[in-house]
Length: 408
Image (cartoon, rainbow, N blue to C red; front, side, top):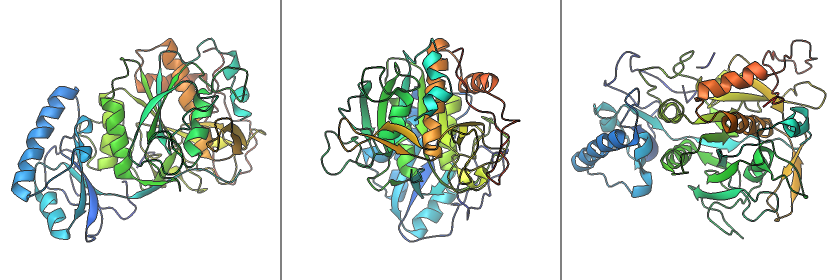
């Protein structure tokens, strides 16, 4: 089952209401950053009408509350606004305003990686006819190493958190995590390095995590806003988010409901998946815990991925439970690295499993570009390998099937 973004959160908006009184979903903290949803999303869809309503509401709020919001925090594509350094009084006042559909405190998130990629071969990627051509994969992470010899399909990107140090662009990678993820998804089929699952897919770096691997939900929201609004020539879009934080699903068991989530993070992901047909693949997490306690892993609209090793078993640290949709290789995975344009590294985590599935989604969309995210998920699950006879020494239940792309 998929269940509220913050463990300490309190949801008071009834599910049947589109406009009603809402409360910020955590205790009041002086000068807290919040994500406010002004447009809930739903069947109306389309960038233009949402942007018009959003602009009207935001202008009125700025006038009445004396706010001045910079352009980078006005997220029209997802009908959201990031409000920084709000006092408790300002937050309370906004929470009562009928134009504010959801008001959620910002929260730290971290990249999912352990200590230490055979996986591409294990899932059958080298055998596929589809190679990901005509599909854009957005790596929402620490950035991607610009100029890497095996990531020649990196087209461009966007930085919420700018790269520090020796960086060619603001979305360059100063950590390594995002570069590793990108290589598993789409490392080029050339004579060097490694092979990605979908080597003909194009890569876009969306840097929302710092060099230390940390960031915030508001940063992810900014990144998703850019992905939605970005003109990629009309190609299908896949988002890889090998990251997460604590929280649960406030609309457990509901996929793209007509009355959208009043949790800002969940609401924006619903917009990406349900309104803009973007397939979102996320890590289950590395806490050895039920994925229902972590977001975005708990959300029904995403594809949630657990990690396995080369012995077809799950490590004890891979999160588990009904919210996990599929398993993929995540232990001792070799991929591209950020320390030079010819660097590679072997690391582990559900972060490393997730890009196998994001690459697989690109394979599906390469063959069936009109597929919705729900159809992409169905195709992956129908083709998946049963794990019913697998050895499971993790100490946790794992009923999810294993990724298989043979036949794509």
